[in-house]
Length: 386
Ligand SMILES: *[C@@H]1O[C@H](CO)[C@@H](O)[C@H](O)[C@H]1NC(C)=O
Ligand SMILES: *[C@@H]1O[C@H](CO)[C@@H](O)[C@H](O)[C@H]1NC(C)=O
Ligand SMILES: *[C@@H]1O[C@H](CO)[C@@H](O)[C@H](O)[C@H]1NC(C)=O
Image (tube, rainbow, N blue to C red):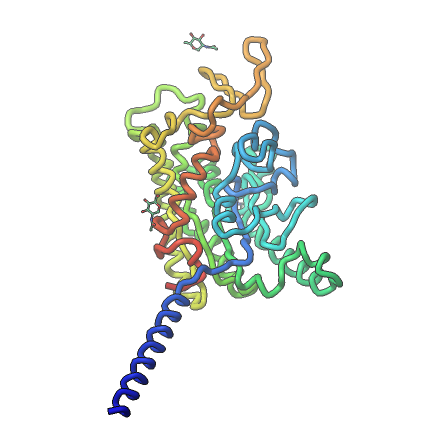
């Protein structure tokens, strides 16, 4: 009797142990990834000071909302990449090209406004295309990693190391991409739609090459890749446009052909991501439908508390006169400034090309919890291969 009771107790205790063990495994299966760093590649949608450092600084009223001064960003405040940093509890990223006041302990940003995936044969002084195409951003990353590793090893004090990435953390970092929009805009300028369609596989393949390089040569494992937004909904498309043919715009006032190209880009990008997952067995690659989030906001602007998505907050725009945000111009002999609107929180478009902070926040809120991601997991889980 006593024996049996003891046995019973023992097996009960054993079950409890099993339960605790199983629970700890279950909990361990999906803790936050605790990414120690973010390395970002992209264009003005995620540039946190690169093009401002390399060329002319982006002037007021850019940055006036959140930073209360120009902050190297093409918006009144934070960009999606800033909300990504916040959600991973990391500081905002310093631009690699910025030589002053930077801290790379938790990553670096290689994005520059005007960047394309493919190299372009034009200078920034023509249409604002950045000389730092994606391949050059990757070369800069290689150099950044090699040089910071060397400096880290040479450093003699914790102080000297405090602004440098920890070498072992490169393989644990999150690698983020938001690029391709300018390949489309250059395409619209220089090619017809068939030519642009024909160029698409090469554009996508060059983005895939960047991912392969980071994986094979640099040990990158976690990738978070934004698709491209509804470029045809940018208000700039409608500046100086008159008598548009019937059917040129969709029901929200977006240029249909342009959005169709963005959709084609995204379709090919998603297929490429699926291929990369089989090709890179240890990579976790998340494809993020930024298009759906941005188009969702544009199509529901009113009930989400925003004004007409095709109006802009910053810049002077009357009839056929457009003075860009932060620029001066003259209208009927009078000097006019491209000023900011009264309530930027109600605008989707900040300057006709770039989103206002409130819109970036709205979009970030929808993409970071994983509901528009493939696989559908929040960014804090992006280190796992699901
Ligand atoms: C740039 O010019 C080179 C040499 O003429 C050409 O091979 C390349 O395709 C051009 N690239 C683009 C994007 O137009
Ligand atoms: C804009 O166009 C309207 C209609 O043609 C005209 O009445 C108005 O004066 C114009 N505004 C400016 C600032 O030129
Ligand atoms: C993500 O957030 C959006 C907006 O708040 C919400 O509609 C959606 O259900 C959320 N998805 C998940 C998976 O939590």
